[in-house]
Image 1 (cartoon, protein in one colour):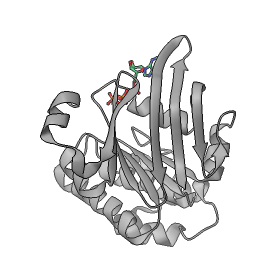
Image 2 (cartoon, protein in one colour):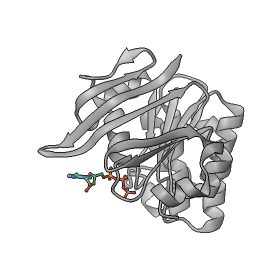
Image 3 (spheres, helix red, strand yellow):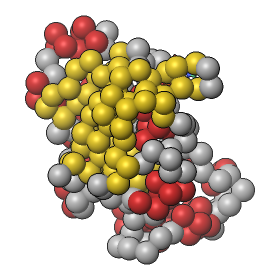
Image 4 (cartoon, protein in one colour):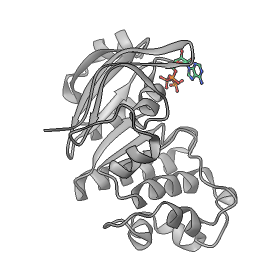
Length: 229
Ligand code: ATP
């Protein structure tokens, strides 16, 4: 059974329609790469899944439940954990407070997050605002894990980070795939790293899903056609 299912989904920012026809499915334990050039609707799709933006047509279900009409906190409670674009940690709270504020019962607790990101240990009493970009990204991932989600959504989690830090983030995502049964939806521009980790991919163009297949089927011709690389 699919954990997440989008069926001809449409969504608008007020009068501006941004999603026209997005369909995708994600099963438990699967990693899906959501791809597309700038402005094609990736973040909008993520916001719609997380119920931060109203859907105007289509169907959206998670864990067998229709998400239409649910608020973002209800989607989070059902098990959708978001690592938003731009990280959005609470700068005036400490690392510990950021993590504890998100906590829900389950295997992911403060200690488990520190095991995944040992760098945060020595930072735990510092304000999130003083962390490096990479540490803030680790905190944002840790915060989403603290909700003990069934699905983790990472929106541009490696954007703006130094190459070595990006590798650390990719390694942590690979670890999550390997060691947990978490389903993961990743939005990122690094095709090489996505190819190494994703089971399947969906490409968006102007608010519509135009290509969907296993990651192995993503040929250079397809990336040239839809991603411009
Ligand atoms: P990027 O890779 O640049 O983040 P994206 O694929 O995530 O791009 P979205 O941010 O989802 O693209 O944008 C999809 C479309 O929705 C774009 O045409 C964009 O201009 C529009 N859009 C995004 N945010 C808003 C907003 N707050 N109000 C109105 N239109 C918006």
